Image 1 (cartoon, rainbow, N blue to C red):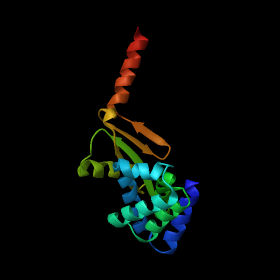
Image 2: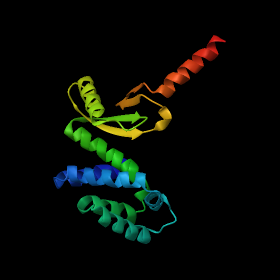
Image 3: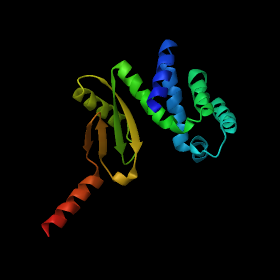
Image 4: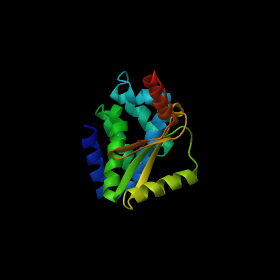
Amino acid sequence: MAGRYARALFELALDGKAIDAVKADLEKFDAMVAESDDLRRLVRSPVFGATEQGKALAAVLKQAGIVGLASNFLLFLTENRRLFAVGQIVRAFRALVARHKGEVTAEVTAAEKLSDQHLDELKATLKSITGGKTVDLQVKIDPAIIGGLTVKLGSRMVDSSLRTKLNAIKFAMKEAR
């Protein structure tokens, strides 16, 4: 379902020459949902009716400055009781935009926020691996990995996190007994 909605939005954005604006607005909304427990509850809870969910969402979108096609699309999802899938739709939309632009998306998980210099070095390294394609980094912070990085690029994944290394040592010590 998410793919169909993302494809429809992508085609509308392509026709309106607004791909970048729609992508920016969707990512802004996705970040807002990730940061706010109240907004997450509004988006995911089946308790709210479509009308009250739509009114609340319209106020949030207006306050955030999300207008135009992205705003209309989010309100359309609300009317059709599909707002709960907005995270999946945003990911699918990002993938369509990346494919259209010849970009590759890499999911990076770090224990703490990476500096701009580290992000640039990581992008350059991944660009050389992908044959010169532009790399869009989706960075998540997860203190549970203790240190290091995990990088997922397409079907390939490199896990150099300290947690994984410690688990490998722990497993090797159990085997040595």
